Length: 257
Image (tube, rainbow, N blue to C red; front, top):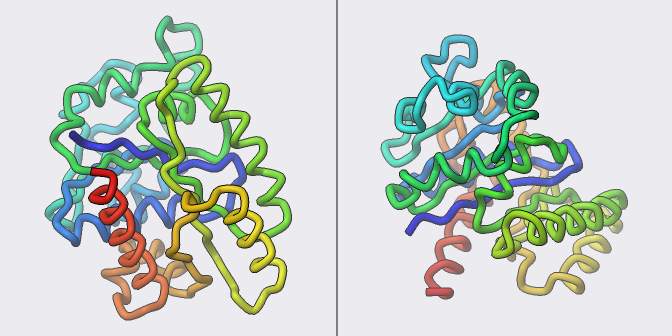
């Protein structure tokens, strides 16, 4: 059965979309069947996979307003084993239209129920806020992958995120768990980065991934070329780190099994 993993952090600029694109691509390159859902109206996961946000035949917005079924909005990407549900700025309108609907928090979960078993992994790239779009993602998810930059404010933000997690568990999704905490944009020469890393490992133990994502120019440049890092420069430290993360995720899954 497929595993639905929401990639979320209420703090912006921590590498959520970079993680979504590159983890999904690395797992697809390892022959895993992967679906990436772009649930951010900015549509950066969509453009980061080389798909024109202004020329979509169907997007997540069309699903939320019941114009199209989930099967109709799934697109093929440049990887044989990676498919995408795209988004663009229209998705802002979905929040307004859904606000008064009954069952608005469970719409994505219900839509994914019919296709979940077709994939090994379904990743949901969330906006950097606790919006109705993020709420739908967390209600639909089995687990939460939290990218975190190792800086002072990250430790403050994790408390807010954990309170949100408790809220979701208490009201909508009692089985939601932490998949893992991923250290991103890491600079080992920075004393504070190492201190934050140590604090996270103390608090979360083996929930902190062994793989660490470094600051890397390839990860910054690749989206402007509409490619994941492994297609832009597979020999770069950034690309190799997400390949290692994919191996770790597969290993954790096999170990749990």
